[in-house]
Figure 1: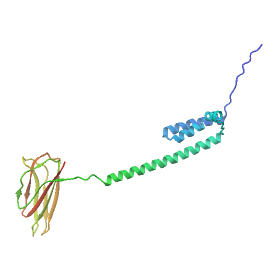
Figure 2 (figure 1 turned 120 degrees about the vertical axis):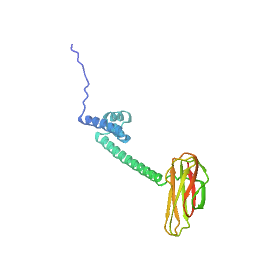
Figure 3 (figure 1 turned 120 degrees about the horizontal axis):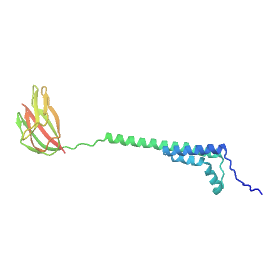
Length: 205
């Protein structure tokens, strides 16, 4: 008596192999690029998905139908993703432009002011800010003039170049200079001039 082993042989078509390869490659590409629609398209291409839909949903999609659905998903997903990226770039560029066009304005506070004529050293005053601005105007000349205005530290020490104002004829002289990173302490204004002048000292922390 002979025993015969009956084995069920399952055939795999070339079309199924192609769909498996395309499905796996599409899923890998979708994961690498971060496009969900591409991953879904790759899953749809897998033959096992069609087997499950036939078993549980009683729906049978041909290989060409699955290929068309996958292509539509890939194209639509890339279009939507491109539109989202473009909109994000526009928003970022507009945000960057608004930030550049609206820099934070520095607010100076007046510390001391005086006016006079001729050479003079002012009384001392206190400065606490690291940035000090000195603004001056000169008037009263008929033939032209030169005036020097500088901020000096009470206990000595160089803190930077002063302000020089030159005029021609009877015009009014104007000038401004800024001292940066100076130490807090007592300071005074030194004026070397032969005409009328006004000086204002401002600081910012």
